[in-house]
Image 1 (cartoon, rainbow, N blue to C red):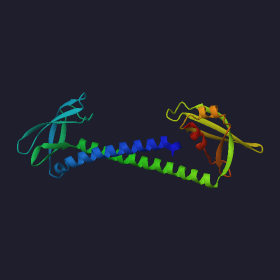
Image 2 (cartoon, rainbow, N blue to C red):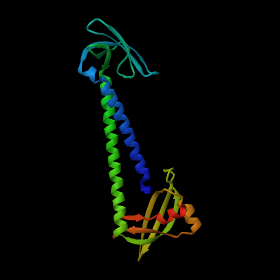
Image 3 (cartoon, one colour):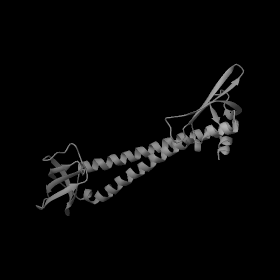
Image 4 (cartoon, rainbow, N blue to C red):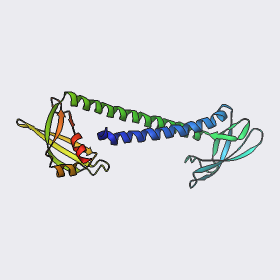
Length: 221
């Protein structure tokens, strides 16, 4: 599991953001549900847009003659001061209202939340598939001891930065095995214990392989 923790953490981030977006959109939808069911449509005007506070002030008059000035916690670049805007207010409470842009925002956040959760599911399936393949290789693959060619720092990764390149020669053919994000300080372990080879489980064609870092990780602890 540790070898896939970067992907697992990425998946969890997508899941968390997805839940947050769906949660916020659900709260907004529930809050405006009664107003939506009892809505009255009128035309209002944009009184002011404040990009610093990201608020929009609208003004509208209800059917009973009540004039309402309401500040919305949204900014829509298509709305400018003096523009007309469609307002929906609660028939029994003219001050309780919303505009179409708010519905679009709620739907957008909900859609993004669903998308993030789908990405989490895809990443989870990807990781699970690789874990099952690793288990299969350990059980049915051929075990070889591959020579350590190099251990370098992978600058594109900060959490698991060590990149390992191994090689194994069988007859006249040499096979290369790489792992780009070792999750512990493998270089120090190799240097201290003078490690020359690492076990690798390979399929018959050598294209699929599993580098077994178990012993080296134990030495690192």
